[in-house]
Length: 204
Image 1 (cartoon, rainbow, N blue to C red):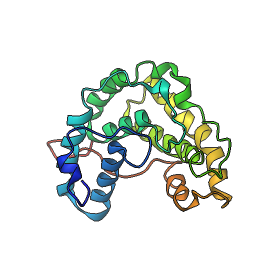
Image 2 (image 1 turned 45 degrees about the vertical axis):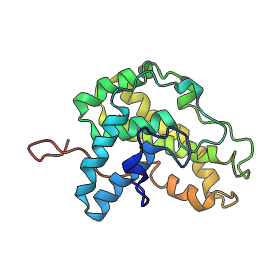
Image 3 (image 1 turned 180 degrees about the vertical axis):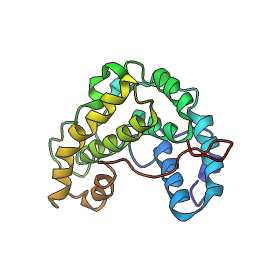
């Protein structure tokens, strides 16, 4: 979806925990579509997300995090899919993609990462990881039925995950300050406003 047409030519997604994560980029396009009144963007983005991720299962979330992630590949993908799948489709998709989530497994996906040196330009990315995880967990929880056992875990974890990171981001001493604030803002309540529209025109 970039200006050089890469998004239209790409045959598979980027799944890294950094800038080139395709699910994150397409989520930003959905945010733009809502904020800028560009509904024509929604259908191609929805189609691409479904094509790339609808059949995914058993995400290797126990590998996370990588040492310079500011995104969780697993949670970023799940968040993106929560935006384009109706709730009746999203809940079983999530069960296939992150089996064990109702048991808070894998634990490393929900625990705040250890940031040994927030001032290091690469290690400091992990501060942003806590914030982006919190935003993703809140959106995922909002897309699940209220009685889903995964909802309670997803709602409890954002505060635990994001609070230390918010304190770090507010100190103004990190080389990542120029972007951490943009991650801190949506962490308390999730970001974006777009949700899939049903055939009758109602918002799911």
